[in-house]
Structure formats: structure tokens, C-alpha cells
Length: 132
Image (cartoon, rainbow, N blue to C red):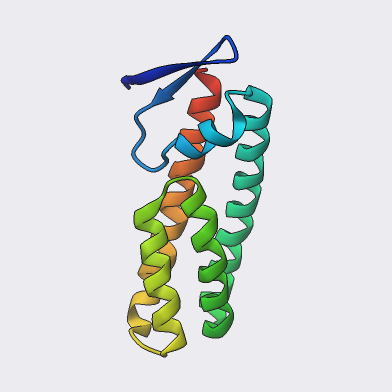
């Protein structure tokens, strides 16, 4: 692990790590370096992603593609907030394909990637909290 740049905010140092899945700019901007607020945002993201992961897997198994597309739309903004632009773009593609009933054979890979990437993002957020 390597450390990125540091910002001094309200006499506290907020270490900005170089992560693969998340970008800490949003957390930095909305929290003003407040560790308690960063933890609250991280906890909300974690809870939301765990719920969405389970729901996506269930909807895919049920072949409830309409609801799956709606959930992809909802998830898109949540991951974008954490700087996960590539995953957000994939979810947009997923949502549009579901609406058009196209590329059904790709839905499983989209859900798998969503689950994997959000689990990794949660791990990175935990690391951010534990190392600052």
C-alpha cells in the first residue's frame, strides 16, 4: 500500500490514499475532514450496497429484469458518489439493455461485477477509516 497526498483540514490531517475502486474526493468535500461524518457516510454506503448486492442476485435468479433495471438505475448514483465512474457507466449500460430487453446473456456478468466492485469499495473505505 502506498500513501497519496495529505490535506490539512480544520487542523486535522486527512490522508487521501490511492485506491483502485473508490475516489475519496467526495468524502473529502462533504465531510470537511470530519472523521465521524466520513464513518457515517461509509456505514450508509456499506448498508446500501450489501442490500443492493443481495437484491440484484435475487432479482437475477427470479429473472425479474424490469426490477433489476430499476435497481441498476438506483445503484448507479450510489456508486458514482464514491467515485466509481466505471461501475456507474456499466450500470447505465445494464439499465439501458434491460429496458430494451437486450443482451440478457450479459446480465449475470454485470451483477457479478457489481457485487465484486462494491465489496472491494467497502474494503477500501474500511481501510481509509482504519488508517486515518
